[in-house]
Structure formats: structure tokens, C-alpha cells
Length: 255
Image 1 (cartoon, rainbow, N blue to C red):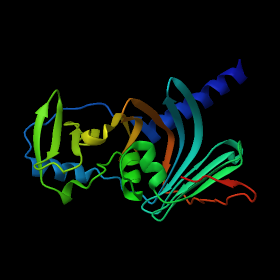
Image 2 (image 1 turned 180 degrees about the vertical axis):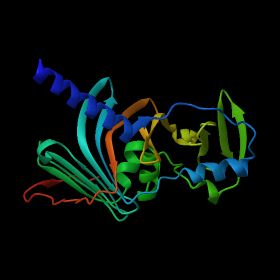
Image 3 (image 1 turned 60 degrees about the vertical axis):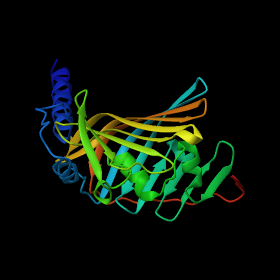
């Protein structure tokens, strides 16, 4: 009985600790009376501010009816590096402002090149800042760089450029209770492409509001790719390493 009581106490302490370190953001009182300028300003205030981030990342990938789920280690050094490593480093990836690199020990292949690989995967032109913004719940395109008009529909603020770009259309949905991105959508009608990123839930970690669950839907013609991301056990500002070296003898993936 004494041992069981001690175990229960340990479990209770762990539970309390975890609740304090990270909690899911629930919707609070909504404010629907902001101008577009005020709305963009409030969104900018919620931009995450940290040096490094570490998390267990659950990835679900679905295409052509085939679904795979993997849990990997994820690390980020803000504005410098995004790093993923699967168990025993079977698959490892490093994304920097200059390049995208990864290798796969299951088939002894590697890729080391520019952002065309990720751009083709999601059907829109990407760079490091856009990928980082996607993962942190930030608008892919800086809202301060454009001229937007705002409206309210179905419990969300909708931001769209006053003048849409020639080749694609952009829409951002912001949650009126905490002003983070609820969904962002990029359409290329002539190319039959559509990218939609839904932020299903957010979590608060050390006073920072960060995504907890993300759903990415990429449509091209009649082919749909769905990527689910869930960030668990998030910690900030630890001293982290980002080891990455492509093993010798691996075959390069050519695009």
C-alpha cells in the first residue's frame, strides 16, 4: 500500500507539472470590433518569441487512401534551422534558409537541394520563412507587407488582399479570441492547386502561444495530400544540437 501511495504521488506530481508547462488554449471572449489595421497589429503581438524549441512531433501522412503515422523528434532554432529525426536516426532532415536536406536509411537515399522539393509537395512556392511560419501558426505571407481588407464570417475574422495576386488567391482566417491564424488558404485556380492549413488547436508554453494540432491539405488537380501534425512535450530555450550528416554510399534523389 505504501509503495502504491508513493507511485500515485509521483504520478500526481508529473501530471501537475505537465499541466503547468503546457496547456491547450481554449476560446475566450471574442472581439469582432477591430479594424483591419488593429487586427493585424494584435496578430503581430502573438508572434512567438524564443531562441530554440524542442518537441515530439506526431506526423500523419495520407495520400491515395494510404495513411502512415510516425512520431519524431523535432527541434527548431528560430530563423536558422528546423531539424527532424526519427527513431535511431532512420530518417533525418535539416531545413535551413539556404537548403533542404534529408536522408532515409530504409532505402539508402538522400536529398540535398533547394526548396523545390517542399514546394512541389505542397503545391506552392516555399522558402525557409514560409515553412517556419507554417509550423509556428504565423501567416505564410507577412501581413504587414500587404494591403488587406477584413470581414467577419462564421465566428472568424477573414483577411484577404484588397487586390488578389494575378496567379493565386490568398485568404487568412484569424481567431477573434486570441488573434492567431485559424486557417490560411492559397489557391491557384489556373493550376488547379489549393493549399489549406488549418490550426485545430493551440497551446500555451512559457507564455508563448504555439500550435498544438495542424492539418495541411494540398490539392493538385484530383490528387489530395493530407498531413497532420501534433506537437507534444514542447519546451523552449534549451541548449540544443542539430547534428546532420548524410551517410556515405547513399543514392541522391533527383527531382
